[in-house]
Image (cartoon, rainbow, N blue to C red):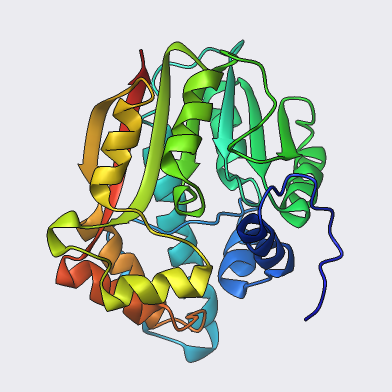
Length: 285
């Protein structure tokens, strides 16, 4: 087995080490090529109705057209999440937990004018994102840290808002929300967009298990989010079911040259009802 060449000071378990190693070596075109469209590199999926005409016309430009459309849908998802963070003043500080290569962090700074801290367990992602900050000339306003989202080391009550965009499935929810509740100021806002399995169906379906194996993650039951929030002074103020809004994205991606092979598992899981795509916003009380 090839050993990682990246530092692992933020890793506190064998599982976290495997996750860090996965993202330190990840170079998937579905992430990199989409980010190259406009410089916002996302590590999440999309919502909204695609322009299906991108799959038609000149075959030589189909790849470029489809890439731009997938990226548009992913950016729309990030905008939807940021729109639920509430009122953020320029002098306040917010945190992108599981920031990937930093796309949503830059969008948040541009939207609110505030200081943004992005955190990732992957040194490769953090280095990439900090270089993006340097190129954008926002170093010091948008900063990325290799640290563990369960134990960030940041000051208690220092954040007005925190979000996870498809990164909660790499953690224990009670530990995660305990740290978020510590970091958030009273009245601060937490938002997540996540895939979760439907408790009505019992244990995870075969399609959900396939997704878990593909991404080395542990998708949580829907009820687990609300139990862990209630235990950690996070009171939901908005819950939006985005399942139908994300399905078209997956159907377009399945037809694109950027398909990775996991698309059919997502489509099966969502259409069967065993898997849901939710936005949950909660206030720290």
